Length: 275
Image 1: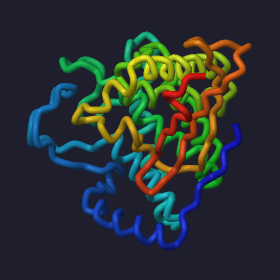
Image 2: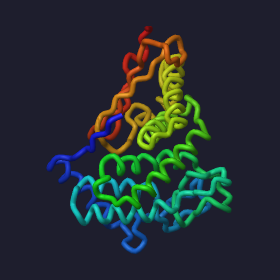
Image 3: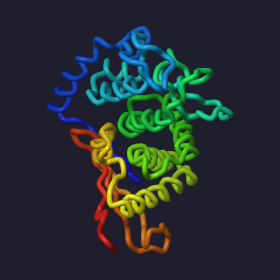
């Protein structure tokens, strides 16, 4: 698969800078992360309402947005954030949550009472993929290797968890992460898993006449327009026939991952047509 780095035009960059200016007040220069005050206790956290925390996911997404401005100071800050957040991923293979990040460094995964949110392997991998595809020329080889290691751990976590098709949002997102990571780093096991999962999800969705989470309040939009950060359109073709993936099948399922102003949209070609 060929990846072409995305670049914003001047108008898009100016719009992005206005958005980033609003986030400036939430940037902690000492911690090199975005911070906020928790307004309610979360199921996946031991921390109480009112705690001041630094967010892993929003910080990484902020780093990617900074890099898209192509301003040297912003690129430098983006790198600093990435270097800060990467080590927070669990890397111990003996831990069941290896490959996952915590929501906040103030609430580490090990030893706490609240259950781990394994979705953070998926959500954190998305901006890291953006960095590798779009901004490799702005990071050194050492950081590239660190990102590679993090993405591979995340992909293995996703594969091990193997979310089923009824969890629309994460099933699609995890498939995307594994597909791209497997291709980027020549990992046949991960690539094979992603291709089979894509065919499985297609057939599952077709059998159910639509996305099973489509009408849920949380994922109505996400299921149709996954909020990934933008890079160039990619087309993935997976052969399917009679509900089964097979190398001999001659009918392709074509899936386009398209960048757009509203994020990253997944388009299923002829999803409900009968071959």
